[in-house]
Length: 310
Image 1 (tube, rainbow, N blue to C red):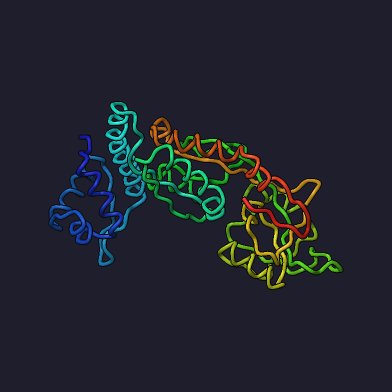
Image 2 (image 1 turned 180 degrees about the vertical axis):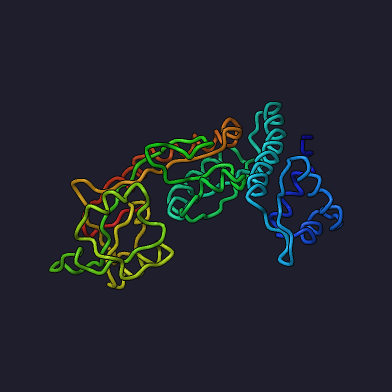
């Protein structure tokens, strides 16, 4: 097997992104035949078919999906090498920093982190993408080379195999329900749920609660859940960071004495964990989650009629 050259790695990435040889060739300024030849050369070198060809274009095989993930990570590390070398010379932390985050973390944790990061390292250019925390979620984006760092929900076993990372904090869940119904037990209201809720960190607790009914309404986005609760359509069980900044019409009730909790942390690849940009981001994350304001936001339900804001 011969090593793949950097330009071959970029061609694999382009074909996967474009879904075909012709579109990939256009994006790279190459001919279709040159791209096709390069892919065949890559397949010969690695000893596997990387793309299924057909009228639909080119779709990565299982081997191709893994190869492209490695290609993205290698190309990103090559880019980071230049940034690291220049930083050694002049002390600056520069270049892009690709971040994948689920919505509530992006809305209530990242702004303060990125504000301080920009003040300390103006040469950094963060790029934030919202990724639904379903299936492989943000960790999958990092593993596949699409993000340098992900804010992810992590259980006690830590980051997925092959990634580096750590928990930053735990947040309890609370019962969210409409304001102004003191005579009604909010637990008897219809349940509104969303696709990202109740992962492995809450499943055991959830299964042990005989008062939780099947979901009457299921939606894709937690902000839609909050809007429906504000209109009196039902209740939901939600993590505190998701509830930060909820409408005034939404009240919170503690699930004490033993509420379910979820762990939130960061994940990155082992090869990028030591880079200056990722280290700087992790420092700011740790600083942000240790602040009293943020701790108050994610650890306590003050009363059934007051909401908290990060």
